[in-house]
Image (cartoon, rainbow, N blue to C red):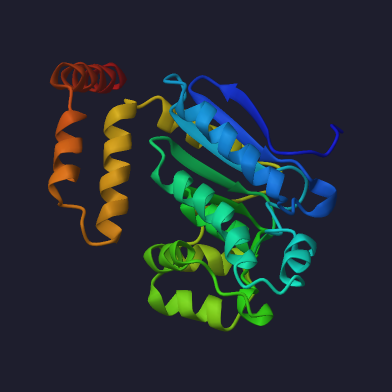
Length: 260
């Protein structure tokens, strides 16, 4: 096995990038340097016009146990009231970037997803899990107020009532319940997860990237009540290429005729 270290970036398929959290022996607990590397990897993907879709997963049997509580405890023990928000801000910046990136992001949740990593997962556009997947947000139990955009994602993805249940009661829920409330889009076997995630990514990556990116931004804005704002309409209009659409329609019709 490769040495455990910061997240790893690879290109497993045309137009698809893969980021893997790479501390499996430690349940992929995220260190401060991991968040910096995640930012760098995302910047590299965004800067490459050939990358249309990003898959995020963890090596081993955990997606992530969240921010390393030992590091958080060391920060908290200093007594500085500003230290915990500073630790949160790196998580928040990355999750916000993941939510707003032009890339379509697929989370392959290969096992438990805990604490701050639940927000990373919710910032992704599509979330696939396995029968062994479960989620747990323990922040309330340790007196840790979640940052605002994480709470916002809980509400916009899962609804206010589910968000309050998961945050206030710190309930652990399994894959079936995650699927029921919309945390997961689908559940597959552990052995088949990466194959399925890459298949979904390849399907998305084969579509014209600009309209997908524009619709992603409008959908996210719609969750906050401003999806019909002028800038959203302008972005959608700018992403329309009539000639390309005509070609794709003709190809689809030709394919249907050949099958009939």
